[in-house]
Image (cartoon, rainbow, N blue to C red; front, side):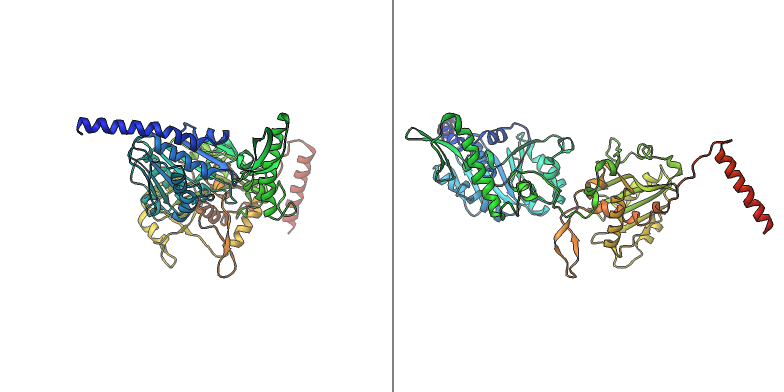
Length: 538
């Protein structure tokens, strides 16, 4: 570039930065402490799990505009489930507080493209993009470049199947600038997917490497804030600063603000839901929507794993090798009996590339009424050869009485007999799963779970999937409930197939050991002699 032109560009950018200081102050002055902590968090991966009307999207827009004004060559990306949602919530905004109204209202030196939903800073060469991504194809369309910051709003809507793609595709896009990936959302009934994995209520079970923030409308000054008018301390709320209470003494103002936020936020939402008789403060809907908490009480789970205490259901942790494949020898050592005395059944859900491949290894004993999960596993993008190699690796450690499997995906033949090809090609005998009366057998399995006759692995693939799988809110044409198609069920199906062919329910109590020379020993010997005499007489 010509030196004179370069100096002119530098001077223009310096002038732009100076003017942007006032703009940034105007954008961020309304942030309350919880918002400041989130939007100023230097962690690369951050998430905000909040209640409704907590100011998440409004804050996200201002955060991106701040960076667009102050970072040379800024590249920002806002994503929602669809382009329409991105336009409605972030481009326009619920209260006219989206990108377009803010740029126009604050007279920011930015150029708007209403067709492509982009904001350009000609002074710094920065760009802001708004996109929708409701499937993997749309997700990949939103990419193709490097980003300083990516924000996925309403992240609770991210389908479970997109979790791996987000991590595989988005995270490399952050490397060029040391960029940041952020999620904001509100808990929902379907406790599954990337947002759930990151923000679940047990911190020790969340995905590692994420900084998680929480707040709700009780922290939002929109629903109650203190102002001074004519020398009096008042509490107001809303965009028009409607007076809620006052005047107040200095020592009363904090309590008055809290009361206003409770009345104008929490109680007002409760009233819309039908009042305390329909939506009590501790009801699931209020805990989720008002307070931003994950709750299980009204979730329609397929499997009954939440109806029993974890200590009664989970008997050992998942045993994994360094490569994340199950450590079969270590898992066998957890069984409550010598594993050499056990019986084993392997259930598989065969995945046709790139669909998931999953398996569950069960064990039971002739004198134990419970069925024990030895290990479970799930992986996508495996060829048939690789799937067979996984099964053979399990068989190297333990003699499996049977392998029960189902072939799924678009390549599945329309008639039975696909397993014959595997037998010919891989010398791997497989019993094709009987999928008739699936819902009846789900009830049978749930009965075993509630009755304490099924034991699983903590943090295992089977339990994690069963703890999330729910019935869909719609039914099929016959009126029957169907499993939510957005949630994974591959490991559950593998476990169901082999559970159906496991026979722990046929166990018989082991005869108690009798000490030699004891009265019980003499009584048994007497019975045996009498039986022999009777046999001789016959």
